Length: 121
Image: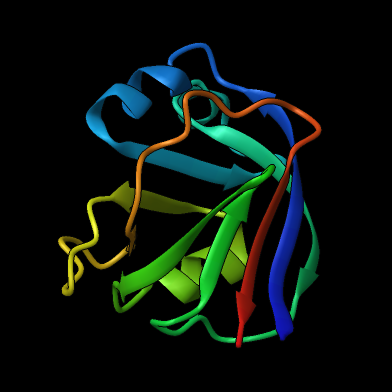
């Protein structure tokens, strides 16, 4: 198993949790513009070494999900900005270029201090 991406959530925008009700989660790296940060789960990357592929496993805190689809710019956005939109619907094709789809239920919440990790097998 190889860790492709690992970070720690450091803050939650005032409107970020509302997206969880619609089965998606928006992340952005530390230093996000304030008007964007309001809608995002902000994190601080520690490992950022590889390309993400379907079949990888994404985890937040103690929960894990298989990656089922990756938009054409999602890996680059995550690597450069810490920004992706995670969609918890198990889709086989990405709905939008910056989206990563995973299979399984959306987390009830995401808290500062939780680890966000993507590993390949």
